[in-house]
View (tube, rainbow, N blue to C red):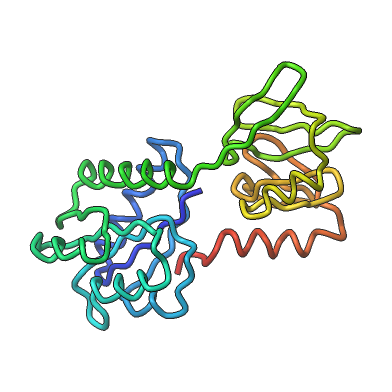
Length: 237
């Protein structure tokens, strides 16, 4: 899932950007969660480095986009910043804060989608992590982001990926849990390790995933809900 922040003080442009993100999501299949901020000072206050992309207006009332981006860069060197502006000369200054690009107002969907796609490609190249799953048929290199959940069955681990299922006897569940601890995986019961990025809903004690469902133990229910909330981040304001 892509975490995108929209920082824009004009309501009509906020609405346009939200609509364009939905259209981009439908066209590309990318899952997007958008957080809305109405001024630069809002996103800077209590900023945490959880966003993949920030769509930042430059001219805002309380804190302009350039100042906000400068403060963000003090704590987050990785987030991709795309400026939204009606004056190209302001956007040129974006190189000082390592902005990827800028989109001119009025915003056309074509220009917006091209630049967002560029951001997504850069982000994936930088962030993608692979693991090697050793099975009786050989070694499979699988992107961590493609794994929905991992199931322990006897002495086997079964990896449920987006387009395939892999079995391995090389690692224990504890070992793979430690290996993936920094990649938003959660042990929702003794036999299942779930990728939070693939969780669509929690229903009647089950985690509903993009490619299946997994039971959540009673002991882990509250902790799992908290972990999912932390991962999803702030709801749209």
